[in-house]
Image 1 (cartoon, rainbow, N blue to C red):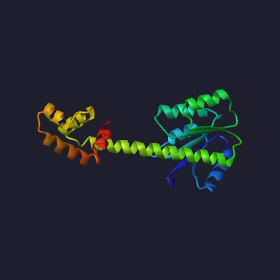
Image 2 (cartoon, rainbow, N blue to C red):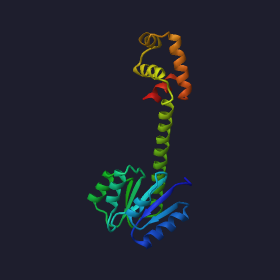
Image 3 (spheres, rainbow, N blue to C red):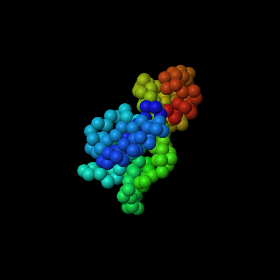
Image 4 (tube, helix red, strand yellow):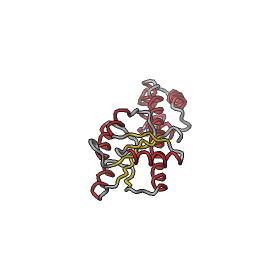
Length: 197
């Protein structure tokens, strides 16, 4: 988690400074923003971690920030921290995908636990996305005929059925299957079919 950051957004400088101090003493890296707009303007797709945002801010509030993040396809987990929480606001924040909603003053250990979980969630999502990209890249290396054979395997056809449909020998189907397993880095037929789904 060393390359992860808590992106702390709060218009109150004293709150930013005190939260940053608490987090840095616990080994968490922070990047501070006085406004949601500034965060959005400087955001980079490679950023990993989570957003810790105040709810009540001039211009763009925490709920508006959540919507802007969704709109832009930014998937960093958002933790809302506010002194102005109510049931309706909490529901809206959670409906907009907030990872958690905390009220000020918050216990340091509770905050740290929530932020660690949010960062872990971001890391898992990022890893899953990278794995999907790798599979898509390997699938794109299949020849058109290999792709045909794979599609028929996914349909549940046996080697003889595939051979009959494509008018090739069952041995040729076996060769295609072996090549696809190598290209897609699969150990079994089940792995091969999962990669194609």
